[in-house]
Amino acid sequence: MGLASCLCGSAPCLLCGCCPSSRNSTVTRLVFSFFLLLGTLVSVIMILPGMEAQLQKIPGFCQGASTIPGMENQFNCDVIVGYKSVYRMCFAMTCFFFLFSAIMVRVQSSKDPRAAIQNGFWFFKFLILVGITVGAFFIPDGTFHTVWFYFGVVGSFIFIVIQLILLIDFAHSWNKIWVGNAEEGNSKCWFAGLLSFTFLHYALAFTSGVLFYIYYTQPNDCTEHKVFISLNLIFSVIISIVSILPKVQEAQPQSGLLQASLISLYTMYVTWSAMTNNPNRKCNPSLLSLVSNVSSSEPTPTSAPGQVQWWDAQSIVGLVIFLFCTLYASIRSSSNTQVNKLMQTEEGGGYGGEGKVGEDGVRRAVDNEEEGVTYSYSFFHFHLCLASLYIMMTLTNWYQPDTTTQAMQSSMPAVWVKISSSWLGLGLYLWTLLAPLMFPDRDFS
Image (cartoon, rainbow, N blue to C red; front, side, top):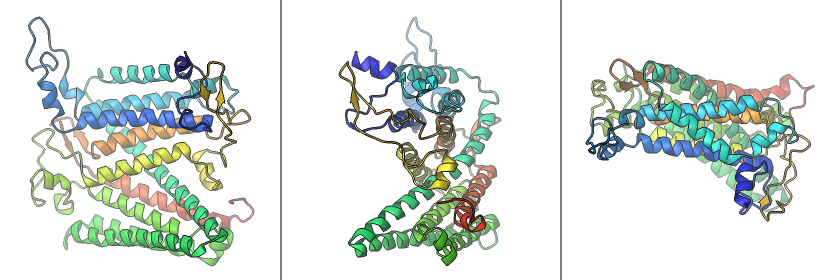
């Protein structure tokens, strides 16, 4: 009875057993993030090499495979696995989170009837997600994958910028906590830690820049790569200098090189990720050609469908960063006013307190949103909606479906989307530094 109340009622209690002081807002975000991670795990399994071959071995399952007398093979395994399955799984998650984003527009407090839907009824929400997923696998091929690719490109562009904002907020909170600890005592230890991580970030960023020049450029070719690497290295130097200017330090004492170094490192990662999508193999000696036993000087084969490398280094790093940002977005409680405005969240996060035990003996999270929500329900779901599109593009390595050959190909639009998102992110960070100087009458604390 207690479990049914937890799954079907309006008071979340799923995590209260291990987090007795958990708050309503945090538990809800974690459960929705778990839905996203579960869909991601299913997508990863579906795209694993050899999965279709394993399904073909099941008698009576795949169309065209061995049959069982009296039974007709029902499933098109070409759709169940591979990039088509990832597109459909992520389409379902995108629709699911977009639906809740639309439903939760302008919810002001937990007293709103829609807040009960947001914070409870998990079993029914899971059934809705499963239902949408099943329906997505019956979508005819046609132009679905091509059209959804461009949706993924646009959504991923926005999500990369949001990731950068979250990293800025994380670095800001990190710097504030460690500087505060240094001022309270044992300052040498804490300042040494800050200096060490700052140096490490810059060392990795500028070392990667050098390696990019060596492996991703040619003396008489790859002009775009030379421009990308040079500009992003220059921009990284600029934001680092601006972050420690006396006027900026006076307006924002918490700004510093730790934040700038982390942003510089992330920018170089996005640069690397963009260059690995260049269809020119001379400029892209990626693991795609190494694992496929193809020389980087030879063209990538497109005549053999599916002969692509889904798992390369930049995709794995992208997944790790995605997991970190998703978890951080679910539990963050920031005092950075500018980031809170961008992410539609409130400072702090409300009083935590102790989880309450109901009449049925089930411990439930504290409702810390009776006076007002601590984050925008609608924007949080929109963020997960964009995350679903980003996962789709990352797992398929940003390859563009070719409807004529049924193959996947690298494309220049993916390159420009990633590079432009890195420039926009750098611009946003520069704005957070300069805005207090440009508008001294406004409160940017």
